[in-house]
Length: 464
Image (cartoon, rainbow, N blue to C red; front, top):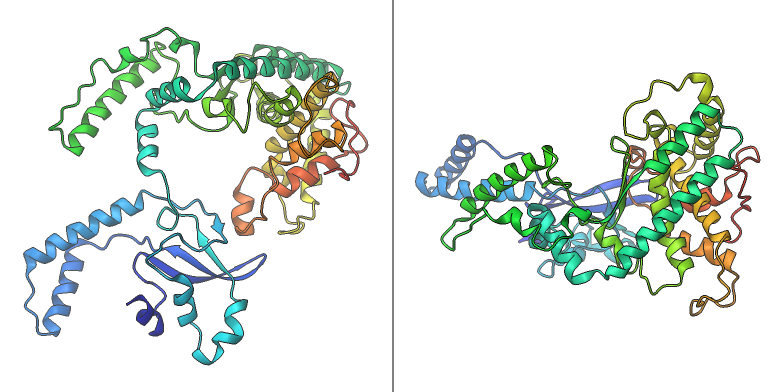
């Protein structure tokens, strides 16, 4: 059926469509979901009835209404799943449809052998096309605290939590030294930065509030489900529980919002609270493991944590004090030198010749992430240079390179991946610089021969 539709020139095939995209890398056929707005009930029923009557079929209004309700329900279910905006070079993982054959049908039969091999295809990263852990995601979303407890109890080595806590404190210490060594900061700015970094509140995996046995269980004492409960009734009870837990959170009785996603493989800095959270999935391999050599944990996880600490002193963070309150005491003349360094980073990204997009980047839009990367690299470099690696295990297959080279290689792994396939327009909306810049641009960074603390002198990126 789909093949015949394509032969007739159709490209919208119901749940998905075949359209065409011109991207920086070239021209593509794109396989994408068709998620239009739901047609109004009366309009759809009238349309179907007229088609049936025109074909000599007496319409059954009750049956049509039932079918439309199922159609609307499907549309609403599909609408919950949003595409990431990213494109994959893989064909959809739907075994029942031969997408290559459908694309072949779009070509004139006499031209298939000549041009089919030249046609490039991309697929929207959407649950319609690729497997997703829908049920698992629903549970994590609806029960974030309980999911966190299950994860920590069953999958996280408690030694890893202590290890990340120790690493984070070491990174804070090196950040303070970096700020102290920076000569071109006005005294009020330097003093504010030092107080702020010193006061950062750190949560590793989960708040200590939930350490005592039974603490989390008490939050579900009044949540009673019955085997006869309908799907609707279950969510009705769940919404009530969430409201009650949210009130407990607002009153300061519990430290985690019941609607906050807590199972992300990431770390996060919140300037309004001057708080750093390293989420629980971060406390496991491949990101961190207490059995790894210390330098591996520092090079890899250390950068990610130091990057988040860097947000406390980025262009936005600079305006908040150690308690997360907006500051009034910093005047324009106090941040002149800071602004010059920031503008240097903006100019560098603006002028960076990205292999996919060229010199079309927006440094002003990405400056906070660029500063955070900058701090992350410098702080981890400082910590590494104090480390005695002579008695630590070496990595298999990498014994022939020195430790400095290994530093750059391991950190580069964070951003080394296939080249971007999203459009320039989508890329410019992202606050993060391109992955290519975060490796090759970051390690070739020299702003007039001056770094934030004057501590690192990167070469031109030869080791990356």
